[in-house]
Image 1 (cartoon, helix red, strand yellow):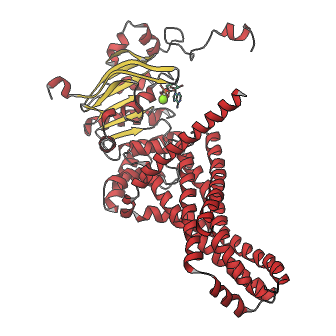
Image 2 (tube, chains in turn green, blue; image 1 turned 45 degrees about the vertical axis):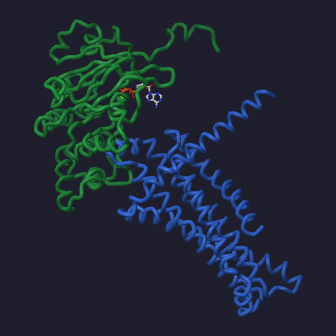
Image 3 (cartoon, helix red, strand yellow; image 1 turned 60 degrees about the horizontal axis):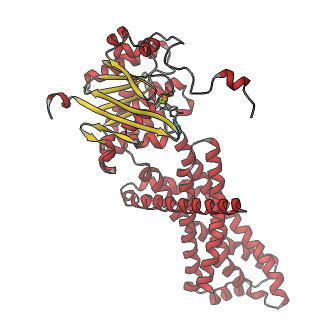
Amino acid sequence: MNGTSGDILVDVRGLCFSRGERVIFDGVDLQIRRGQVSAIMGPSGTGKTTLLRLIGGQLRPDAGTVHVEGRDVHAMSHRELYALRRRMGMLFQSGALFTHQSVFENVAFPLREHADLPEPVLRDLVLMKLEAVGLRGARDMMPGELSGGMARRVALARAVVLDPMMILYDEPFAGQDPISMGTLVSLIRLMNDTLSLSSVIVSHDVVETSQIADEVFVLSEGRVVESGSPAELAQSESAWVQQFFNALPDGPVPFHYPAPSLGDDLLGPRP
Amino acid sequence: MMGLFAGLGRRTIDSFGRLGRGTMFLLRALAGMPGLLLRPGLVMQQLYAIGVLSLLIIMVSGTFVGMVLALQGYNTLVTFGAEQSLGVLVALSLLRELGPVVTALLFGGRAGSALTAEIGLMKTTEQLSSMEMMAVDPMRRIIAPRLLAGFLAMPLLAAIFSFLGIMGAHVVSTAALGVDDGAFWSQMQAAVDFREDVMNGVIKSLVFGFVASWIAVYEGYDAVPTSEGVSRATTRTVVHTSLAVLGLDFVLTAVMFG
Ligand SMILES: Nc1ncnc2c1ncn2[C@@H]1O[C@H](COP(=O)(O)OP(=O)(O)OP(=O)(O)O)[C@@H](O)[C@H]1O
Ligand SMILES: [Mg+2]
């Protein structure tokens, strides 16, 4: 591979995707570089989770391609896709912990499935990951007994336990108090740099994400409307970005899901 | 009128579509089964959940069905003076019909519905998706062991059902109805054919176990990932299992004994 394409890990080109009538992506292009923390931001419902699922090969695009390490994810065989996923970690927005297993077993799950480790080694690895998210003491609890924020941190520990080459975080900061938020922010950056991973963060938290992201992509209405380093974006003239970064209620980014005007809905003819 | 036909046509097409998807699903699950040889623990866990936890209801029902059969059969046989053949009547009814059929119906209601709800909820809460993203194929890790455990458990449960049914009938016949203990067993031994009766019953229970487990895991996997979706899938499991078992029982009986 040559110099420029060599450090592009995920290459999304001309991606189109619809759910029924609703067009979610209409020609998304973005390149995620190896070794960086990239952030995907955008208003709720723009399809950030959908984008992660497309990258992970769980959904098929209507048009366009997603290449990871130069290979088309949607042209891979089942076996190749699973081999790729083994090196990818994903934190689900809902956490998606296995409810019938304890916190410890949840984090141990990928290791038990993929690595044939002696039990003491496995235990140490799991406890180290739990320590990193501050939940070593919660190892024997069941997912049903955790708070939302704790469950998400357990899911984070599980997503990174195999030391993947790329981690996709769907809303890692949602539901965290300021202290765990700060810890998580530095943890994500630290893991990225010390383990030389690549990280993709989906988030609404402009401040936290700006602290750690090398590059930010702003999604709106099915396209990438702006991209660049957080500093560049803060300077951006674009009205979209200004609105999003400064949390202004008015601007080109609609707060509302597409709908007829409120006046028409309330005062128009009743069905 | 046209609407009626159109509706009927659409439902037929839908059913065939489901059957096709269900078959594809079954093939994928079966492809995951050889891998289970390396991980017998996964199947053991499910055998416990599906088989061992169904034991109580199967044992109690089997005993009662046998006892009722003895009472009812006695009333009919005694009018012909043939009450000493009660053992034959009970054994044949249980081995050929009631054992496999009633066990399969109970299996659908007890274990099948639980399987559907469990898998459906795993889907709803994205546990299956997250497993896929951890490069663990839910087909192999979740579906295949459950399906295999269902296949294995059902014939064993049916055998236990028939056995306890005969024992229950024996107790009622000898203790309450005055049937001779020796006649009960010797007539049964003389009249029950191993291949014709016992094996055909076993084949039935294998078929029913296969169909009931298939329906249960497929409905769970195919459930719409919402609370109503899972609830509907669970109902469908019980209804479809019952219909499939009764329908297949007719076909198998016609082929085997017709
Ligand atoms: N299973 C589904 N069926 C139909 N539409 C869906 C489905 N899942 C998501 N959508 C639609 O796809 C769009 C994008 O959803 P997605 O979950 O990707 O948004 P998001 O950007 O992650 O939002 P949030 O920040 O709130 O998590 C939404 O408009 C949603 O209505
Ligand atoms: Mg989302």
